[in-house]
Length: 76
Image (cartoon, rainbow, N blue to C red; front, side, top):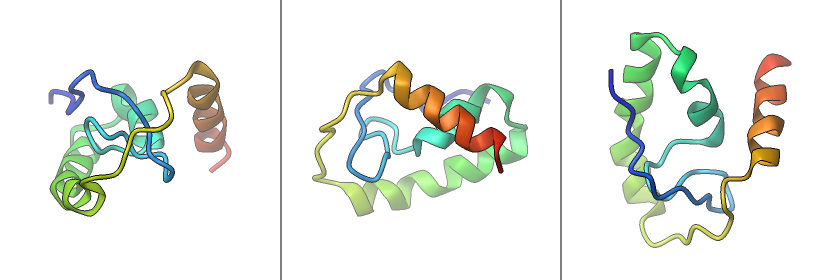
């Protein structure tokens, strides 16, 4: 299943990408997610787009944020 990434990464204050509308945790796990998990993420994107439409991507997706999300996911 292809990624919803549109190469316009930038996070809002809730850590959702304003390009693809995935949460940083979903972006981090994407390559290891099953097709069922990926479909669950895809199913949420239209609603999130409507919810966050107009928000700004005021934070670049940094390596530090990525590593923090990886650590949070491992500790679940």
